[in-house]
Image 1 (cartoon, rainbow, N blue to C red):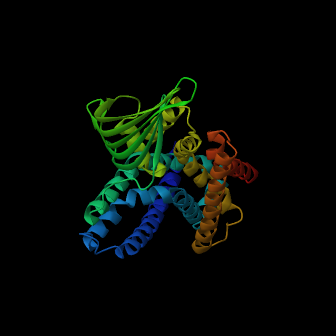
Image 2: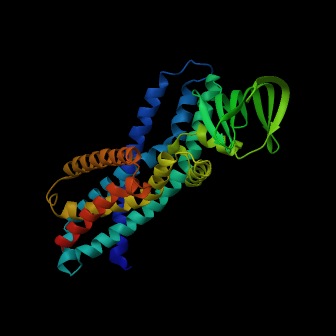
Image 3: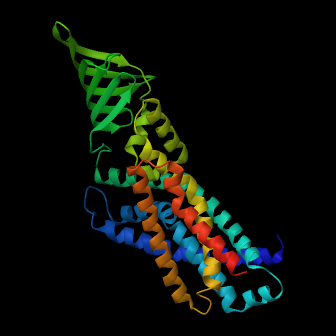
Amino acid sequence: MNRLDRYIIGTVLALTGLVALALVTIYTLVVFISDIGETGKGQYGVLQVLEYSLLMVPSSLYILMPIVALLGALLGIGALARSSELTAMRASGVSMLRIGGATLVAGALLGGFGYVLGDWLGPSGERLANALRDDARGVRNALDRSLWLRDADNVLRIRQLIAEDHAKDVTVFRTGPDGRLVQVSTVEDARYVGDHWLMTGIKRTEFHDEGTKVVALDQIEITGSITPNVLKLFILEGDVLSVRGLYNLVRYLDDNKLDATKYRIWLWRKLVEPLTIMVMMLFAVPFVIGTMRDAGAGQRLLAGVMVGIVFYVLNKVSVSVGDLYQWPAPLAAGLPTATLAIIAVWRLRASR
């Protein structure tokens, strides 16, 4: 990599940083305004809303990263074209593939930063923000829906998941080797202590060939694969789970022969995201030099926003269709990115 390549990379990253600052500022302002109406609930005031909005910045930037990459590359390459620097490069024998390669390196650096955002900073900030808001409002961190889990021959229904190590109103269904229901237990309270679940207030109904038998128990201890770490993954939304968290969740579902298609697609989306950022920046090079050669910054921004919206919609459609028709997770998560990459390389080679 020589000085020319570093200059292209620096120009593209500088404009990308400005775009990121502008979009994140607007996005954070929207979050602040939308949440300001929730003030007055408990101790949730303006300062708490401001802190919540700032903690959401890494997550917001991760959401906006693909369109930030596209707009930054459009403006960066456009600035080189507008100042005739790109023309001088082409006249001195610099090929379009080389310019695209330098832009791709900038995309790789931005993609690595995006991975850190999506796997660490974003989820951590969002969890802290939600905990801050819930604590200020005096809201318990309880699951608002019933949760069904399977552990070997046991199927659990949790009606109130207070925390990852505390549940109430739990029903445990146990099946026999032939799949028939042999026992149903209702549990008032369950807490994870040490390496096992301590369940209290149990009413157990056992099914036998000659009839049924009802037994009341004060407490029992249960061990198995359902740990607080597993429950914590179910409390969190898929978009704030890290790659490791999604992998552990998929492995748990696979081990218990449960459908992990949705979470497997989310996992692959996380893995494909850095490549998406790189492809977005590569796509901007022939886009600017070709159809947008004489366009101003405003026109490039508008074109970039339109391309970003179309790509976002196609990404959502691909994931939904893949989940519906049971496509392989890499195909469902990476089809729009692969299509855009093919178009970018084809246009780049055609314009050299």
